[in-house]
Image (cartoon, rainbow, N blue to C red):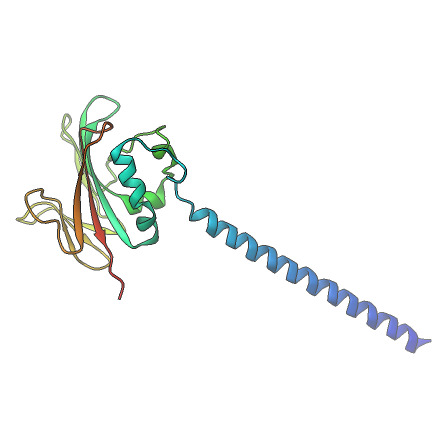
Length: 194
């Protein structure tokens, strides 16, 4: 009788262990599926599926994937009027902004991308407020005899924003005609992988 009862208890334990392992495997599978889905959704581009008419937004969309993946870092120069009608200009680290802001409202036309005091450089022409801040990707060099420069923190190469000089090694400058801004330029810095 004890022997039979021991077999019954042992078989229940085995069944419980099997059920528990099934539960663990199912939970792990669901976790893996969830992780894969979050990666897929995080890779969805904010510009995806948008019908972009302005050259500036088209240029940002063309660079979005490369900036998100780390193949490129882009600096955007914008000069325009803010919501108070004051002329402002500044340099924006596109890669950093993509990581810290939702760009869907910009690509859908609900919001305009504008430089702010926390960007690489910002200047309000009316109030004469000026700021400069390094970002995770660029160090601002504002006291160089050659003018304003940005040093890429990853490969240490210099991005020169002076329109009369070359933009620097592995870098390019694109002037854009835009209906959205008085003046828009994108500086692309390609990151070489060894």
